[in-house]
Image (cartoon, rainbow, N blue to C red; front, side, top):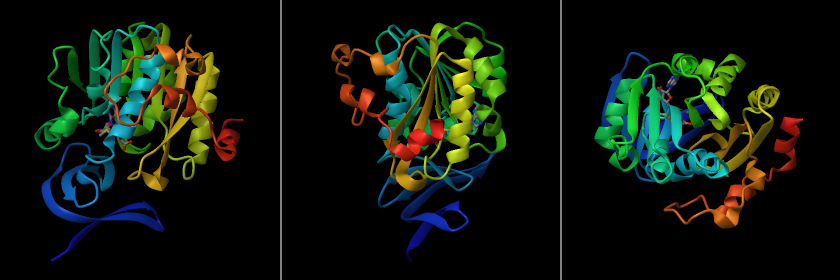
Length: 275
Ligand code: SAM
């Protein structure tokens, strides 16, 4: 018997994948958590029926949320990931030799444990000696840390439930304060086709707090519309001025020095969201 999984992305659109196996399902304190295997994308982590990451295309998201801010900063030593319990962003951060410490603050400890069990390719750096794992609310964690991080990444679920506050201006104010004087933050900010109001509002908020606000995009086949964006707030360094010839060669599949700048070249309809 064939079994197919559908993520309903809007009330009239979905992505459907033929499944091979269900590895795990549970209801955690925060959400329904599942790991399934699909023919097209391999193993997938689902939260409340929404695709979080897949073995086949995870590299795009995790490389782009990490290497763009880390190579924009001249010498990042301490990084923080809010959310990101699958460990993919931490795996990428650890590739930077300048990093002395990477903290992961994930609200749902079960996401971390289940990712370690079924997605070792993604979670593999969570046991690294430079990594500290905190199970807790990222909003509270950021409020309690001042002037501490070089780079902060908001690797969150969609802006509903516990992640809603991670898209609010009060949270961005706390992020600003948790960063050092030349710090940078990046947040995943959904699809430019489906989340126009959110992207415009977040960009406006970030621009009101940080001297440098930028938006960049990439292609992620399993996320709604396949086209995704990240919003960056930077206190000092402008990614458009990064000397890309000085970026060392690291082990990536999507990110490269030319993409470091090209990702900020926006189609007109996306640029218009930032006015
Ligand atoms: N790459 C993914 C995407 O865009 O779909 C996000 C992956 S990661 C699994 C998102 C994580 O954010 C989830 O595990 C969720 O539990 C966590 N999260 C949601 N709200 C949070 C909060 N307030 N503090 C910390 N983590 C949170």
